[in-house]
Amino acid sequence: MSNIEFKLNGAGVRALLQSSAMLSEISKYGNRVLSRAGDGYEMDTGDTGQRVKVRIRAATFRARLDNARSNTLLKALGGG
Image 1 (cartoon, one colour):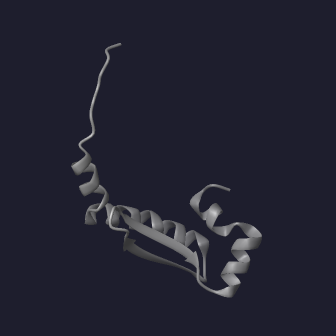
Image 2: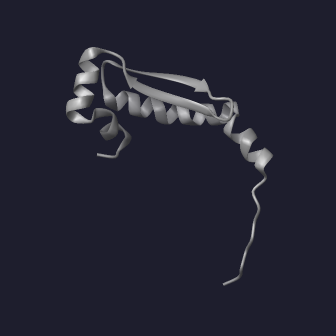
């Protein structure tokens, strides 16, 4: 086995994390989670300045109650 060393290009990684291509990709995952979560949940996208983000949240009282009782968002992510 050979020893391979590599060094990340910090500027390149930063550019990737802030790119519209990354936002498009994480939006696909966000839409999948949103479709599994059901009614009352919503997704929004944003830019923190260092990276793009997708947030899914329980927007209605019924959805918040459902998420508190059943961990709906965690299950929609595939973690429960």
